[in-house]
Image: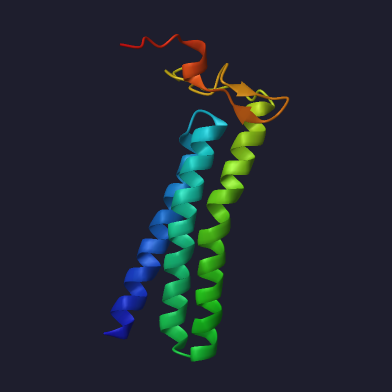
Length: 126
């Protein structure tokens, strides 16, 4: 039974790592590549690490793997957000097919805050 779990987690991890690699090649711009690789590579790494924990069946190794998984889950989204934010403010071009850029003309780069969209519109009071 343990071998089935190990094989399943290894297959799932390999599949998600392949999807992450495919996303780097196939996605049209940096922001989509970043999103694809962050999600898929995190799931892939977690699955492969879980397979390793099942394989070794040792508390010391499983504890280290749990810490590694927690570190990946906590840091990967933050790192992707910071890279995407730096890329956006460095004017990395969006994909030609991008329909909506909700951040354009709403972010004050001097003070790094979003402008209130309601401040530009007059509100009617009854």
